[in-house]
Length: 118
Image (cartoon, rainbow, N blue to C red; front, side, top):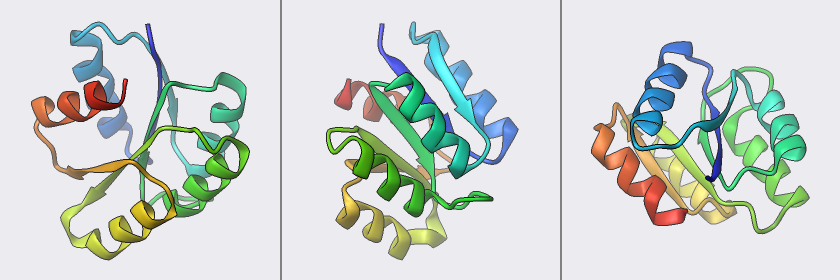
């Protein structure tokens, strides 16, 4: 089964994503509450897919995206963002993110995006 890294500073969001993924059989999930930890966990675990929030403490999602891709140019990263962050999403896509999911999202939308890249 694929390894998935979920990076979001909101614990309820990480829990919700974990529950949605677990219902579809994804159980090898790592969680990070900030961008710095996301980069560290990526390097340690080399997940198949990373779901990365844009706004996080210590290291924002755009910087974490850049650092992960510098470490592994083949990393599959999907950004998670609020609707008001459209310009940041476009920046993330130009930096190498594969896609984005807008928060709040429907579970089916999240799963469709995850399945698309795994």
